[in-house]
Image (cartoon, rainbow, N blue to C red; front, side, top):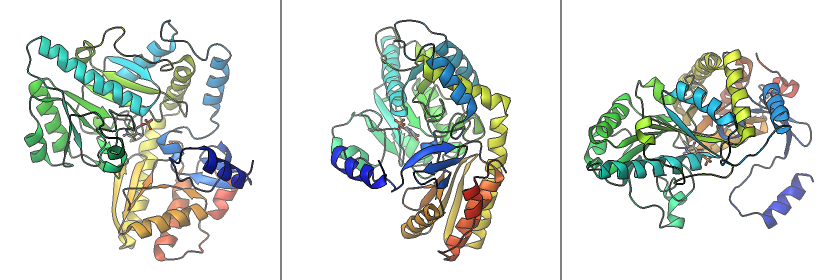
Length: 418
Ligand SMILES: *Cc1c(COP(=O)(O)O)cnc(C)c1O
């Protein structure tokens, strides 16, 4: 099938959940995607923050080949070695005690929300005063199922499906007074992203996160860190909360952890884990042998190739180049983010839309979120040469030069690490 055929078939056959870009990809290689005509695209989005090691990474290919010849799926009624091995690495990285594996971000959030409700129940049975309410933040994104979408702020994601899970109240972003005012013993958990992703790459303030930690500690409520986008090395540390020196009770992971295969995880303390007993929660596919084996191969690669140090180094360089653009162009309002979770905010939604389209014309893939924000979630294996290509192209676009060629040659020849 070619692009037009796929487009026509999907328009007739699929639920209209996405407005896709009109490109048909057939394969990938390193930081590049390659379309049906053999054209290369520099991918600075990596799925949506999923393909941490880019495309066709040999470690992932090998892990899939080896594990798929042994065991792809096994129900959670029997043992395989993958979950224990992976739990050991993830809990150690996150300062946590226990893990639960599922298949996606929203499922990890559902498990975390259920854990908080169940834990509050246990505490009540022990005489504590603890309610069932959640506090989430304005501009948050936690997923699409009835629980996680209830904690997602944007009305268009929630309201068509009302009633979603009741009992969520939204706190103004980084407003410590609003947080204090809305917190009470009615609250079983505060849910937040240390760096909001969909919300426009917005880090919470140190004071806000510290206050959320103090308030929850004062009642025994849980602090749940949604690390689905910011976690697993994306910011140069294993977890974004580690930049703040704040340890949550529960953390959720998903997007990049199995190098492109679906896998989600909830990490928590032994104290919170007291609430969960056999039969209360589960999953058919979650934590299967194949996904776990690939996640372990991704972790081995991170270690062997010092990938987190690379994320910090290349992220600092990337942010520096964006800051240069901000100095030069009045249309750039802000540059935000850490590691390879970065954004540039432009002064109008029209300009952001135009920049996105111009970049795509130059075969550079980025994403627009929160109307005016260009978001970058590239593979962790990005090189300086790739950053330069993007920076030069953006410079031309923000200057109003729509026929520029910056980077075209480098992309066409598929330059890898620079
Ligand atoms: C993507 C995302 C989710 C939802 O993950 P899915 O795998 O799409 O269900 C939840 N929280 C954050 C912060 C995310 O970026």
